Length: 157
Image 1: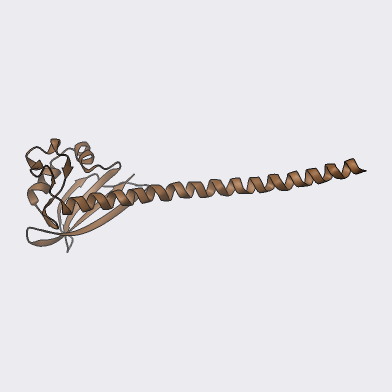
Image 2: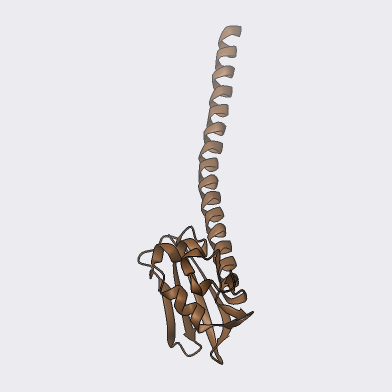
């Protein structure tokens, strides 16, 4: 009789243990996928913020990168922080997409627009998103040719 109760106790305990392990494995899988997705979204957001900040705050490196854009180390549109230089914007717009993306330091595709506050588009660069699965958009305000403009950057996959 004693051997039977040991067998029933063991089977019941093993069943409960396996159910708990299965429960935790299912939830671990659900939470880990969500965590990875939110981490990637956060990385995209951070990249969009840092790239857009550099574009409107810095002139680029070297300062005269517009003379030879393909050899620039960093792209920037600002003649001084918050004031954009049309020549820098035009030089960047003329670059092939692959070179522009590399100079921005973007690991994802990008779409950059410079618009007046009433919505008139002054410049656009990159590829417009089509069915993006993940995107981050940042808008920065600046001055260009004496008028307020919005610099909108989208990074997407």
